[in-house]
Amino acid sequence: MYIVPIAWMFVVVLMTVAEATSSQGTVLGAFFTFVLYGLIPLAILMYVLGTPARWRARRRDEAAAMQAAEPADSARVDGDGSGHPPGARGKTEREEP
Image (cartoon, rainbow, N blue to C red; front, side, top):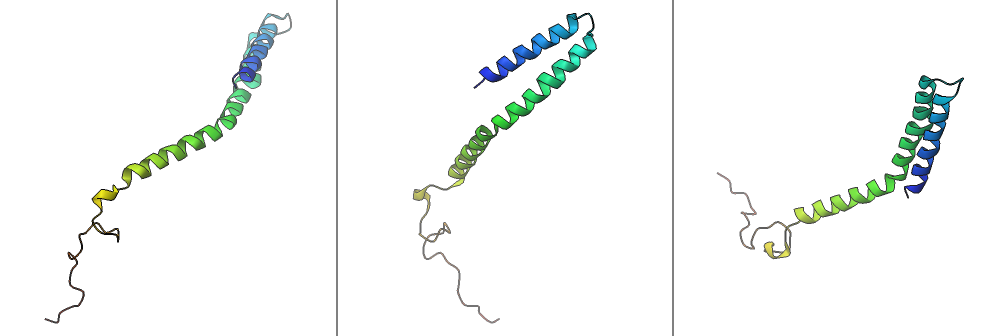
C-alpha cells in the first residue's frame, strides 16, 4: 500500500534536488516544489485512502464499548430488562390521603 507514496516522494525529492542545483533554479523554488508537489498532495491522498480503516476502527471501538456497557445475562433477574427482582414492584394504585 505504501509503495506508491514512497515512489511519489522519491520523484518529488529528485525534482527538488534538480530545482535547487539548476543554474536557473533557487532553493526557495525547490522548497515550494517539495511542499506543493509532495507534501500537500501526499497528505490528502493518505487521508482519503485511510478513511475506510478509520471507519472500521471506529465501528470496532463502538462495538467493544457497547459490549462492555451491556450487563451480563446472569445479572438480570427478570426478563423485562429493569434489573429489579419479580415482586419488588411498587404499588400500582394510588391511595387517597
